[in-house]
Image 1 (cartoon, rainbow, N blue to C red):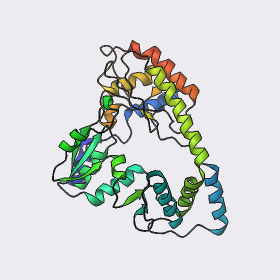
Image 2 (cartoon, rainbow, N blue to C red):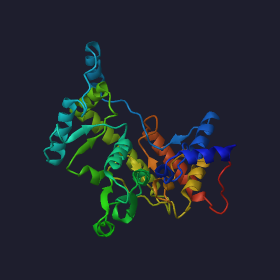
Image 3 (cartoon, one colour):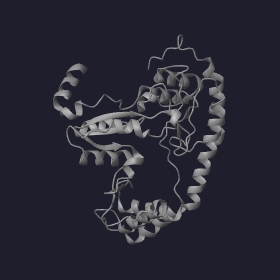
Image 4 (cartoon, rainbow, N blue to C red):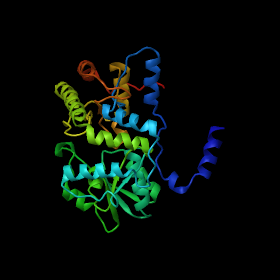
Length: 329
């Protein structure tokens, strides 16, 4: 029954969808973590996707709109929000951006915005240079009919693009370089994400942009403290190599000294340390694990960061790849 079902699904799907590699709708690793939680285990979740309370100004702005009805939607996004975004761009980069012709507010997340960009610009046989490790950007390129070309970023270079290696990957067929930082520099159009984007949501986003300076400082200071707890503690583990992140709230430790199979190592940490981390293979970075120290579903505390360090320092050195096998999930 199952094989017949897959046969008919494959007959129904388009060729461009079938070009995409199989991705778990939900990894068995995450299902195992959920089962352990149901059994009463305390799992520290470092997978990311944290939901945090927004600045008070967001609530206040939305409350002001509720009695009068929501603002009318605008195709390019609310003008006041586009103006706020243009002001931020000018302040942060010194570039003047026209809010009426160069900013569109759309997308249900950064990945959706990137996917829409690729689908609307990449033709069959176009090449897109992808800097790895990364999310599943290559699958978006395949869906468009394009060809992904991979350039590996190296830890010893601080995960910064080497311009010589990058230039070697560029051919007459190259359409774009799919890297979040570099795509942002494209001057033809600025694509900003604001949860496409009911007008009332855009009201909240504008309020956050204009009135969140102190709130943002508190968030950044908190992330730095948690990063420093993890970095200072985990770098004391022999063989555990980490590049100290300077931007986002994630680390990508190299665990290849202990285990080349990142999925296997992630299961070991879940079963023994009760810490859930995505394996690097999810991000085209085999031999690594990804650690989001901000939180997943809830904001992680500094005490939990210390607990992660304690569990890792006790259990990582005990790992024996020749004896450990993944559980049957």
